[in-house]
Image 1 (cartoon, rainbow, N blue to C red):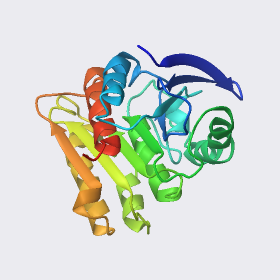
Image 2 (cartoon, helix red, strand yellow):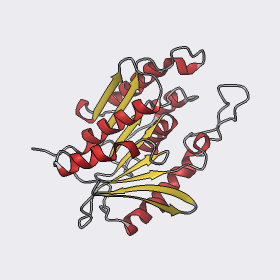
Image 3 (cartoon, rainbow, N blue to C red):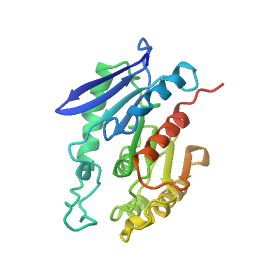
Length: 244
């Protein structure tokens, strides 16, 4: 690999960062929830696409959560299973940290474009829920948003989404879910594919165009990391594919 994978820390939070081979020009940054779990094993493929000029160069910033059950959830809600902690709903505080603290830091310290026109935001499961919540609450922060198996079962999230008025001029949104997600569940999680489809349809109703939305059902797949990693790569191709 000709690029660089490094560790940084900001405000006590670990960052896993990939820099492309050429850092002489400012490039878009992709902010990823759950550290580098979604992309660490895919870096060679990403770099090969950059060097083949299949995609534009990007910097990837993997952000480690302090507590994903709290930071990725938009409001307090009870746990779905007894014996597990409730969700504390700290997403608004966390997204304010991204907008007001982390993004300015990354722009200062790394060769990242100043404008947000090409910056990306990707999360899986609760991280995917948070990515869409950020789109609703701070639409100007990121233009390319991917929710991989987003947890849209979360209490009252779809009714909340229906009430939002968003301006999605130029945004691209990638949604993916496994066809087998929720199989064997008895909780609201059994409806994962349906809820992801409903979120897709809702975005269309809110005024997004078909060309702005990519909705993919991964046939035969459940809710697991390898599926997330595969669709992370697909989202990167969707967002940063170079025009021939």
